[in-house]
Structure formats: structure tokens, C-alpha cells
Length: 466
Image (cartoon, rainbow, N blue to C red; front, side, top):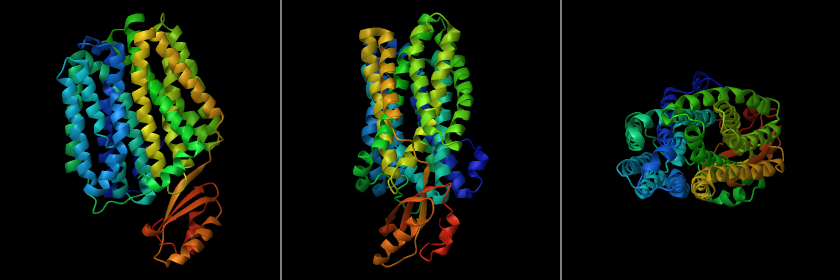
């Protein structure tokens, strides 16, 4: 995550570089469109017909509901009808929802538009297409590049939202989102290569057979609750903080962009040392719990900053330093904790939890704001974060394993048990799952002890494929 883009792309071939950069840009344009309205929706949406805090909150989070329900069906359909076709459908739905929301003065129609935006649930399809177009050994870096693009799009959206919103209003933001969707369609059509065949990789694709294993894993469920809580609190924050900035701290909506820009840039650099400590020193659990604790204190502190803009800046800086750290760390932890050959399924459950959190953060936060005001939402955030902290403290220290894929030679069926035993005896190998139909072995390995050079001594390993 901390590598430069040049280092990430260094060992990729030309097709992989083109695919990764193009798909990362599609992801970024879509997420930019979704996030741009968040810092201004409560300010500009109050002028919509029939708008109430509860309905405005529901509108902010509505995309999360349809996205959570449809992302796995989209992924499965893409196996049958093709990745690009489902991405086209998803982007057309996303653009259509943006146009619906842009063309109305009714909060109810805006809600319908937001639901339609979320119905273009192409996240899992984009990851599957990325898997089709990259080699196994480059896939982790490719996925990291997409993750970086999402993080950057979120930060940029907090700046562009207030800037463009002050110029063109809420409708203008939705029109910009529709234009971004059209650009994304162009990139998919003209720049992204079309794979010759769809690969069903367990690293990126949910598998029904693994669902029970993933949903009964206490460590993974704790991480799912974590991302659920993180995005619930993030969505709830943007119900109240823009209003606080304008009404309590006297900062006009058109000036919010510099506030968010300075917070996001400084908080990103501030969290980097803690990521390094967690990963390099193997102190991820203390770092994780510390970040959740800092977010909890920051959420409580927001209730006390109504008299000082600088105090509000300091509290939001702490909030986003912790948020950025958690947003960057949780996917990596899911990848490490997922059983061998279940990474795609684990990430599917994780993403669904994230979208449900965004939906409930808007829906419940809006209802609380209507009944209890800003303070009610802030203390709701504190309670959710405190619960997450308890869950995180009770979690066993995470392992430091990673996925490793080995392509196998064609062998007779009764040799797979012997292959399984041979791989398990290698130093650093913690789990092995062999998918016989794909002649592929999925390993969970501790990189500190695992030496992939030892694989060259096995006749059943397809050389040059791992």
C-alpha cells in the first residue's frame, strides 16, 4: 500500500498495466460520483420538497442497500453473460440513477435515484475482470492499486463536493456523476481489454461452497462487524458535521472544501507510521484497537467543539487518521484471516457488510437527527464505535499469513492427497486447499518462514506459474 505506483506496476506486462490502470480509473470515477454528494447533501438537500432529516439520511445511505443486495448476483451473472456486459449494465444503471436524482425537486425521487445508482453494483464484477486480466503473482498488487484509487477518490470527493455544489447545486453534482459514468463506459469499451475467458479465481470470486465456512468464522465475523461499523459511522458523520460547520462554527458551505482537504492530506500522512508498526512489528491488534479507541473519543469530542473551528479541525483530523488506518488495514486482515480458497467469499461478505453499514448509518442516523438532533447522532456513533472496540479487544491477535497460489501439473485424482500432505510439510504453510477441477492449490503461508523456491523441487508443480 505504501509503495509508489511505479513500484507496484514494475513487474506487470503491458496488458496488465493497461488493465489495472483502466479498471482502477473506472472504480475511482464511480466512487467519486457516489461520495461527492456526502459532504453537501444535508446542506443542499434541505431545499428539496418534503425533505426531513430522516428522509435526507435515508437518501444518503440508500445506495448501500441496493448495492449490498445486488453485488453478488452481478458477480455470478458475469460468469454467464460476460464481465464487460454486466459492467455496461451497471454503469448505465448508475448513470440513470444520477440523472433521475438530478432532474427532480422531490426527496422521494432523489431516494429512488440513489437506489438506482446502487443497483449498478459492479464492484465484484470489476474485481473478477481484474482477475481475468492479471497473472496470479501480480493480482495482490493489482487489487492494492484499485484500493488506492478508491481512497484517493474519497479524499478528492470531499474537496470537489463542496466546490462544485456551491457552483451548480445538488442537481449539478448528480449531472457530474452521470458524466463520470459515461467516461467510465468509454474507458471500459475502448481501453479495458476483453478477456478470452472468464477465470473463476477463489481470490476474487465468491464460492457458495465456502459461504458457510466464512460465515461461521469468528475472526472474519468480527472484521465484517468492523467494516459495517466503520461505514455506518462515516455516513452518520456526514449527516451532522457539515451542518455543524455551517450553523455552529460559521463556515459557509462553499468554504468547506479547504477544511476537508487539509484534514484528509495531513491525516493520511499521520497514519502511515502506524501502518508500518502494525505490519512490520506485527503489532496489528494494538494498532487496530488504538485506532478504534481514537475514533470513539473523536466522535465524543465532536459534541464539544461547537465554539472553535480549530478544535473541530483537530478532532476531525484524529477521526480521519484513525479512519484511514482502519480502511486500509481491514481488507488486508480479511485476506489474511480467510481460509485458503475462500478469500473471494470472505471479501464478498465483507463488502456486503460495508454497504449495509453505509445504508443503516444514513437511515438510522437521519431518524435520530430528526428526533434527537445532532447530539443524538453523535452519541449513536459513540455507542457503535464502543461496541466495535469491545469486539476488537476480544478478537485473537490476527495472523500474518498471505494467500499463495500454485498451479499444478495434470495428475491422477488419487494423487491429490499426497500433494496436499507434501505442501503442508513446507515451512510456513498453514493451510492448503486443492481445487482439482482447476488443478490449483491455494495456500495460506507465513512469508517470514515460507520459501517459494522449495516448490521447484516438486514434480507436481507447474514451473513458472507460481
